[in-house]
Image (cartoon, rainbow, N blue to C red; front, side, top):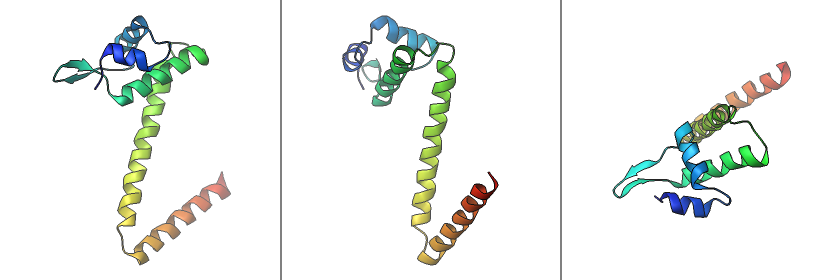
Length: 114
């Protein structure tokens, strides 16, 4: 976990004012640690994303929560997919093949209809 100053050093162009603005808006949330509030690596990545959205892409501040929510959902779905993939990998080979065939049928059906 890192403090405010270290986060600012790691994210090019980030100011203390902008960091605190992001916290006030609830876009990032400091974590509680043994030495006080701090930021995790995921927070560093999130602040970089927010800066890119706001500064490089000129996305309006009102749209940021929606975009962050969508990104959070995508990451959650990726995590769930990884868990399912790992669970399927633990199945005996014949069952893995049946699952693969069922997935292929369903994906093929989506391509044909949409």
